Image (cartoon, rainbow, N blue to C red; front, side, top):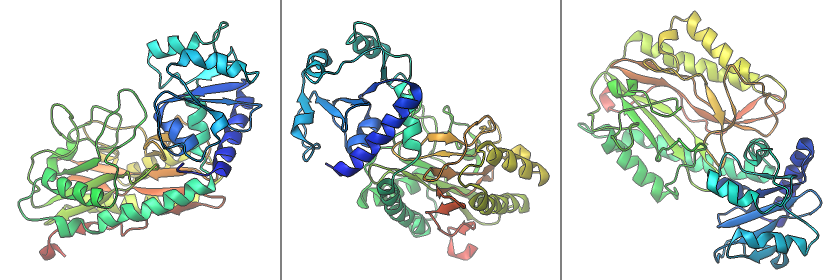
Length: 398
């Protein structure tokens, strides 16, 4: 296993507390993110967690090595989920009207099939929402892993100027970055929540391309291609423009999120001012974001500061604006809470948050900083402490 029994026990207890708060007895999980959360790896099958059981029961549909080390008595090989009820009955358990399924992950046909495992039907509680809440507050082992992966991720941003050559397109530069990421252990997969949400390893966008809105609810867009209409295009990186690099830190089970902005030539004063405001907002966030304070205030504060500085037209997009300034991250890049004005959440000790106040200027490009933070009792710990100033890509621009 890619985890320990102690860690699985700790996570199981967290899930059982959530079951109690929802007044249900059990969950039946099968999604990749929740398999990763509970076991530390991916398998095809189901995990059954009951409020009275100390550890999960795991039902595997295909042979796998990834559960080696887990108690064999708690692993069952099944050809199909219809075999699960009889196996549970042997332990005095059952899938029932108090069992929640992952409504946000399951196709309708799979939901209908699994709900029939209980003669009385299943709970209306969405186990996906329950689990996203549980996963939003990381264990110490998770935080240790995230901090380590952030260190690997930061290496990529340090070498961006070394990889740039005159005449490169955005895609040329992104190819070089992806190669360097894979050499450092990137799994090449960007896990994102939402059936209508797709992305590759990240974005490299410059100049006018930054003003192309994304078809998904992501901060930055880009033209991309018809098959993936966002991100880098064949556009050459031109003088007097910015290059925003927002590549996912997909180096293991957990992801981290970083954005840095580079440039060629000379930038308008207003663009530089906006980038400095992004840096200022990060300093404010580090002091504000602590145990118990409202999440919504982050968005409200950022919007107010952008308005005070006359930068509202460019804040969080230009042609198409998004209504958030950050998000939780972990196994998926877009976990809860979302930093929006509508949020009713409060920050909790152990949350991992990506904060990304950004600006988009027509023709010039996007500016701003994104860091990954861990929320504490007294403030937010920046686990991606790279230089934040605008960074020249050409030696003569220094």
